[in-house]
Image (cartoon, rainbow, N blue to C red):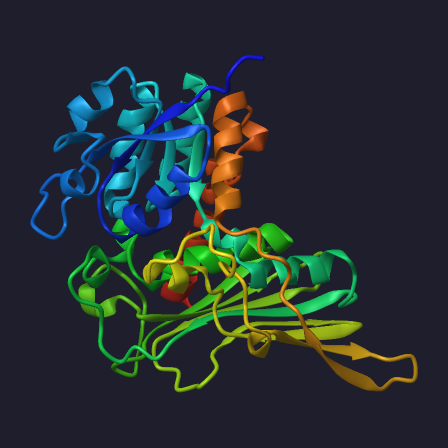
Length: 371
């Protein structure tokens, strides 16, 4: 029996994304091998060569991409670099995985998708929260008809973050470059909504600087960039309305994550999927409790009884697939070269970017916009 091919993976960037969300999962994926890392300026306490002495190291993109042994490039750099770096990697004949936010515009996303197809290479976007167990619970409840006909969904990333971020690209990069709350957090929320319902017929948006108490339009100036966002997505054919909310001034002991209402029931969930927090403190995907929630964090399911009464039930979160599932699917797509097997294809990320662009236009004009 022929041995399974291993693909050499190179990482560009060596921050939290590379260390926490990619390198550990590459190590756990049998067909992938961590081959090289590009870190422009290794320093004491933050050095890829020190942490991974047995792989090849680079400080510049050109020699990194010129390595004929390199099969896959994973971009863990700020979003304003994603388009030129991904284009260069595809031109060099590499498969590419891009951290979210993918690229600043849908036009750039379309161009990269077209190039990947022309080169016969896999281009994938790391929308890992498709594998959050709370989201998978929502998908299951909708798919199996537990909630009946869905009429409304709320999806939230609300936090109490009175002080603005400092010390990373997230502190100063605006929407024009793919930064800010709408791209950073909104990409996750909108990608999940896209998976559930597809493209909306209309998008209405309000941008806010909650830390200062001001409505803004997001038109390029730093003081016009929102730290909080409210979107209303409407689906004309089904009547579904989706509320997408991102906030930084939310004083709650339990922050709302999902609230789904249907003709037969409702599902209410607080708290975030535990995987990110577990990974940040050194947890591993092989840990017995990785991705699992304590029963106290399970959601509430309210169901309509035959006599018209409403009964509340604890709704266990589904068995976690974890972010390892993403890498399993990504490796499979690289191995067989089939575009339909890519877990998050660039074409879908382009659609989500069109929703973001409609939101930006709506916040600017005050009108509902068709994406």
